[in-house]
Amino acid sequence: MNKINLMEVCKGANRIGISAHIRPDGDAVGSCLALYHYLKHCMPEAYVKVFLENPPACFSKMKGIEDIDSQFPEQEPFDVFFVLDVAKDQERLGEATKYFEQAKKTVNIDHHISNARGSGDVNYVLPEAAATCQVLFELMDQQWMNAKVAEALYVGIIHDCGVFQYSNTTPRTLEVAANLVSYGFNFSQLIEETFYEKTYLQNQLLGRALMESIRFMEGRCIVSCVDRKTMEFYGATSADLDGIVNQLRNTKGVDCAVFMYEISPMTFKVSLRSNEKLDVSKVAGFFGGGGHVRAAGCTLNGTFHDVINNVSAQIEKWIQ
Ligand code: 5GP
Ligand code: MN
Image: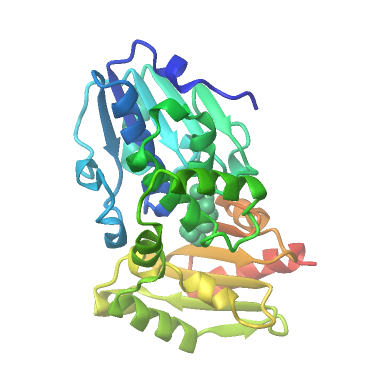
């Protein structure tokens, strides 16, 4: 896919909107804030606005986070509307879909293999990039980079590659990170506060999910589920369940971890993680979801048993 020129794309634009996927993670928040700071820097006259569902509390110290609009008010059509870390047609743009549909020009920047072609008028999708933040870095002109942009890009990268642990980390990911760190920000604190630190509630839910997990396929797969009753009991939101699926996957002998939680009665958000034995983007894709080879997700209806039966049939089909 040919590189795009951000300045060219935004030329003459007075109103620029930015959004990413629902239930935003580090890469969604990081890429939106990075592009926001970047465009404010190089196009100071333009009106630039980020629309995103409420970011998880661990990102609350990130610069510019207070400028994010989570109310999605009616807006005049944007001259340029950026959709980051998601395709419009994957139904994960949520309330920001209306801005996309009204915009004069849409731009889709992403790294999901399930979004190979892109869904905007202008597209740049780089599936080999560890994060959308890494894709954005490739498109940014160093002369407009600053510590605020660098910090936001860094957060997106560390979240999507598990602080350089996951196999999507490439030499290029590390080069980009090295360049970002040179702008000078407290990366140790960022990693601790946004990635590793958990609230007491998160740890309680993690403990419970691990206790109640079930292994199947001779221990090669593991599943755990948090239902609505439990979420209501703890007053938990989806952000409080972040990271549980990764911990399940850390179990010795497990090639595929499945974590699900009930987003509404009999509707489950399913997260999948795997190692080199299975491409979970195929499993999620079968159910209308998507993602990456080793981290993917989808939404399924039915009881817990319906969902795990359907998902495990697909896992069996694809696992080596
Ligand atoms: P998570 O399990 O952390 O929610 O998502 C893992 C990866 O799969 C992320 O890259 C995310 O963007 C993608 N993903 C999760 N759920 C969905 C979904 O419902 N549809 C699509 N297209 N991608 C998803
Ligand atoms: Mn991402």
